[in-house]
Length: 383
Image 1 (cartoon, rainbow, N blue to C red):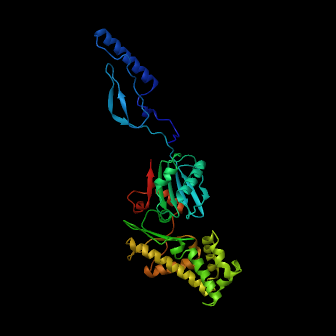
Image 2 (cartoon, rainbow, N blue to C red):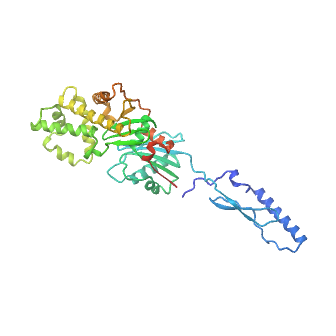
Image 3 (cartoon, rainbow, N blue to C red):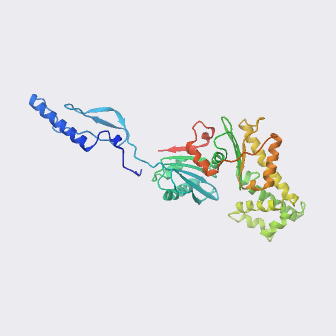
């Protein structure tokens, strides 16, 4: 492991100064002379000076005039002076934000992560890039999209030649929660390209959805875009009522009959389909089909919130704290309908104000109590 400082404090040296060593030599020399004059007792020809230890858990030798060395029973460790800077990292699919906590370096913006590829090597690359710009850091708290079975130890092993000594790894639903509501009870639903909901109760947590675009993410921008494209093609076929969505889709795909082929071969098809949700919102006020799609999205999102709150025993008569974040909620219609559906359950319901963002939640991981319910969702490694 690379040492970034070899300095230690005078108090750690415990008397190992030049003058102290010289004095010990003088004392031992004087004592030897007295012994030789008084008796024929043999003494060591080369008595050892006091020993300075800088390694951990090494026995220390204690010396006194006229006696051989005795091994002290206590051990001592000298701290090697690792940096006090910590990194908070919010790794999303579109971009990654890094904050050097304890430093005046501005927040960094780095590329996002590809959740379809192995994540630990990507995280390691991002952290090396960040460390090159922030200077050495001893602790890293990282919240990431796409986190599955990966562990903090896997990432720490990839950072063996860096000053990182402790690593905290969490799904970005955890950092989104901490950023939005802090460490109190409640529920946070994030709806962007995908969707995920996390609730925190007095003793437990519950995750709802976030199962990806193939089998989940109900109410997300991808879900809205895909549902709208399907409705557009149904209208084109004559299977359903005509909708303005057909014309909007044809503007992007002039040959509608080959649109599915174009999308299937597009490596950015998920983002492209999700982007179509903004056009759905633009015509929702005048197009019944588009409006219904947004209403259904809001229903899916409110359903996730209610399910998560019930699982952590916050679904009673008391009005829970709920925060809604992500691009989908920029649609006034979705936000209004979402709130209306929750008001049916709690008549006095109102959305909670968010206190921060994902990067703030990543920073909160650094001080999250070990007894907090969210701690069970963290992977922690240190060396």
